[in-house]
Length: 257
Image (cartoon, helix red, strand yellow):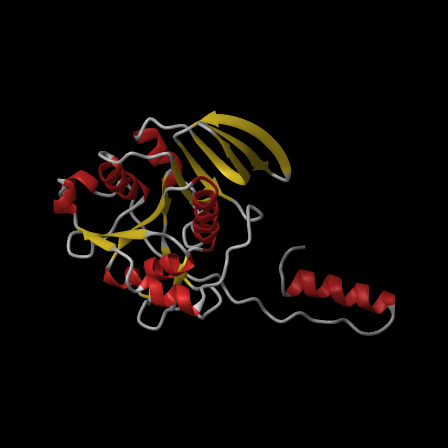
């Protein structure tokens, strides 16, 4: 099987993220594989181990994105592709990503493409479906189970807590939801092997694309952090006194009554 995984580098939301001038300050930020993409990598490896073939992880980013690709290789992927757009693009959106990936897959033989359900930074969930549409390929989102028998994929899809069972012919693109599997940790032997695995680097010119072809259709005007919440207050005294004080606070401070 020819299995591909769409991978994205995202901010580590467990670490502090600062905003300056309406943009995220990346100077001190930590980056990781988008957590939902880890489910996709794990599932790709499991399906390859069952059915044979290769797993290729693909990302669009800059030279620093190699770190996340090497992590996926250490998990067990066979090879990786970095499409470096840092010299060509200042901004991009879901259209940009899908257009670039369409050109990448144009001459590829594909049985299965996996992606994360959403990226935790933007959470649009658009790239997978957009790409499938461009490739004229069926797609199923938020999958929590995948069994492949011959040329048919039997899938269970999460539908807001319920399950929908679907059968679809290969090739197919799926996006992976939490609960599909438990992504493995990288091992020291895996990390050492990953250093020797092939990692191809491409630019827009290699895909016969220029900046105008992939110009973003949307623009981010500003990014800002939510306002800090004020500390809660515990009202003391008897119930009647608490009610009076609460009404006073709602009227005089909160201005809601």
